[in-house]
Image (cartoon, rainbow, N blue to C red; front, side, top):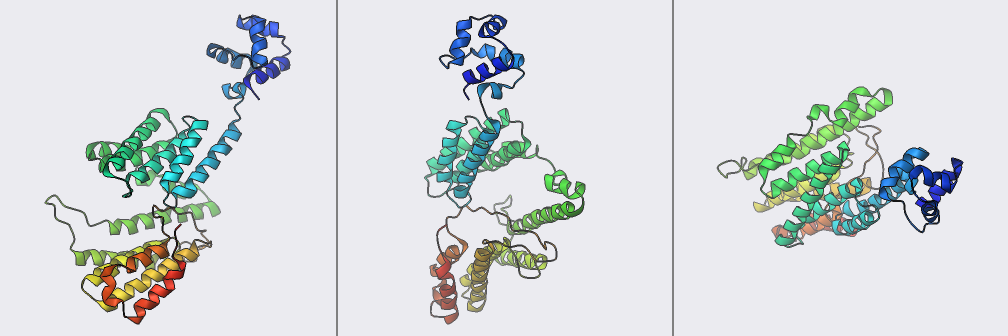
Length: 367
């Protein structure tokens, strides 16, 4: 319904004539008539008095269906997510920008757009100047959210993106200042839910909390090798390889039955890294071992994406979750393109190498 139709309905429900309403608002009956026939709109200064008079919200008076709006916004976000989660931030951005034309300043649409543009800023398909422009757009959107939005989830997302973006732009102090405003790990949502829920929900919450910790620890092991103050790396290449062995062993300890779920993709990547390390020394046995494992985990990950649940002791009964990637290739295509690299030329005539390629090739495709 239009605002005019709403005013007419509310006036009649209150058993008022146009003259009664005009007198209360100190306007002419003709003005009320023009509103109710949609020939004119009330002055902005009259919206609050009308809301108080009829005991309705501004959204109700203006004919805004909040539930319908939320449904449409969620549909837009889901459509955009179907692209951004598979490495197509440009397409997601277009959908979100169109959504914002319909729902200006909607914080959730702005939030998702911020992430999409941030993904563009890290895409090597763009020039250095284009990526710098995307970084600036990301900062502007995030800062707008911090200044206008009070919802914690959105604000925390904006701070996260600002920390990464300011760091990439060289503004380390600003990134640190924002990071220090975030809560400690011990008081995060997952930690609190794991303690305050009861029964089945408590068990599920503790699984979620542990799942986040495992991912954090495994990824943390991979990123231990940092550049020190003297510009040297903390670990040698051999030590980095040992760290990757630890990451692999850690996941095998957590998922003792081999059903790694989401982490099949992590294991596939880690085994590829190890294959690359051993290929440098022409160690055929270890290179083939890790290439074989990379392919096996890639195939298992594709199968897991079709559905299912974890079966290991810690996560038994836990359903698979969603995942996102900034790579347009599925895991099989990623492995296939890696093994085509010239670094593996010394294995081209080896039967085991050909077998790996033949198993992965039919499954490789763009997302």
